[in-house]
Image (tube, rainbow over all chains, first blue to last red; front, side):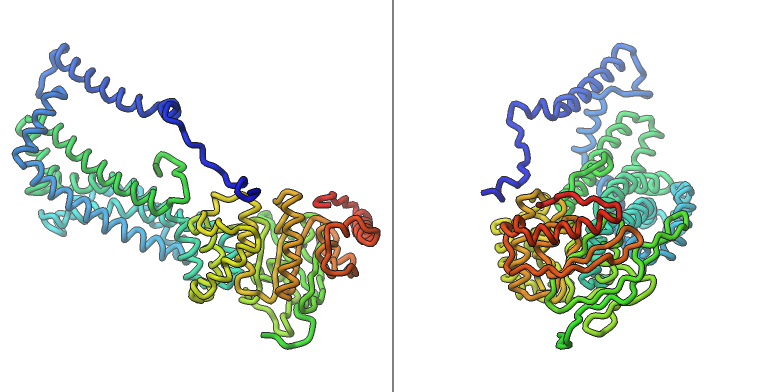
Amino acid sequence: MVAKAEIVAPALPSRGSLLRQRPELITVPLVFVLAIAGWECAVRFLDINALILPGPFEIWEELIDGLQSGVYLKHGLVTGEEMVAGFLIGASLGLVIGSVVSQFPLIEKTFFAYLVGLQTVPKFAIAPLFIVWFGFGIQSKIFISAMVVFFPMVVSTIEGFQASDQRQLDMLRAMGASRWQQFRMVKLPNALPFIFVGANVGVVLSILGAVVGEFVGAQEGLGYLILQYNFQLKIARVFAILVVLATMGISLHLMVKFLHRRIVFWRKPSSHLEA
Amino acid sequence: MTDNPSPLIRFERLSKVYRTTAGEPIHALDNFSLDMGKGEFLSIVGPSGCGKSTLLKILAGLQPATSGRITLAGKPAAGPQSNIGVVFQEATLLPWMSILRNVLVPADVAHIPRKQLEGRARDLLKLVGLQGFEDKYPNELSGGMQQRAAICRALLREPEIMLMDEPFGALDALTRDFMNLELQRIWQAQHNTVLFITHSIPEAVLLSDRVVVMSPRPGRILEAITIDLPRPRTLAMINSSEFGAYSNHIRDLLAQQGIVMGEEAA
């Protein structure tokens, strides 16, 4: 009985106090509604030209229209494939290379010096080169996306391995654990929260990579569609596609977040980047 | 594994010099020589920074000595030994594993199938009063319970030698008394050799065959005192005159060095 009393009991919020404990459940949707309403009012009463800024209702109608015609689905699948494939390739490469490099201090220091140098290169600026190398098809977009995902992923992974708990490592080393066991049983789990920070940044960049690639040169995809509508001054449709892109981004983000919660279950997210 | 006669552990003129980040040398240990017999329970008492923990880390193979050497049953000890179990000041359980899995970590490290040692792990947890907590995670347990699980982990593979670095320092007095008696019972049942580091003079006298009293940095042995009290020891003995004499003697030794030790766990 004494032992039982020692358990740290998590405070269970009662129903009434839920909103008091998490008032953002009210404020977040409230701000959304106010912003949309303000936008619609501004467009109507200030008589803003729809070619410059269409109102939310017009965008909504275009969105429904585009979804029903299947045009967003067709191009969205292309962009989605580029973004998911790019994310998976870039994240895996970043994870594997970061993990390997972290195990050898000299290689890590050498590699990190170049990595910091490369970080300052505006990576999207070399997107046209990727079109030259890999053509106008889906491949070049996947590689652009993978490249921009790779960098935050590899940096987070290396940082994660630097954050290993020395006491846990000592404990394992005292048992005679091999380097591989130390890696698998202590270093990797300790690095996981950092790796997920990198993955969350990577999700955002994977969409940017795909869309920028399509801007530079493509025959399909939502980025290509945005350019087309922009030239035709169908601005409401441009906004509608932005909504589609945002939805895709949020979906991928939620998937990563779900994995984060499941895999790093022992740790509460400590920063907004981790959340 | 070792049929050789004592000493099981021999420290030969062990010294350790650290360098601070500013490059200044810190002499943590100075010419430390000591023999430990098989089955002995030996405590080291001394002020903070007397090199007690350094000594233990060298023996555990976590740090190299600057000079001198350690032999285990006559063989020079190099690196971590599989027949040594270590309990640190903090439990250092792995937060992503259940308590049972944590206790079984040494099995994983030694590539022994978990199933083979699961029964023993459960028995050990029961022994320290953690029955029913096998599937909990470390952050669901109090510090004292975590430390008990850490002791089970160290005991899993029936190590010949147990190294304990102030394992009960973070526990409340009642739990600490309980754990002291448990440790004595486990030690008597397992016949292993224990090197126990503590800040508490009563704890050292209660548990040990010998108490080594150390000077402040650089750590040297002031005296090794044989505690000639009958086993099993009980908490009631703490009030006996012999017990008091040992405690006072150790306290006087430390007082001559200008150190006043507290009455922890008395």
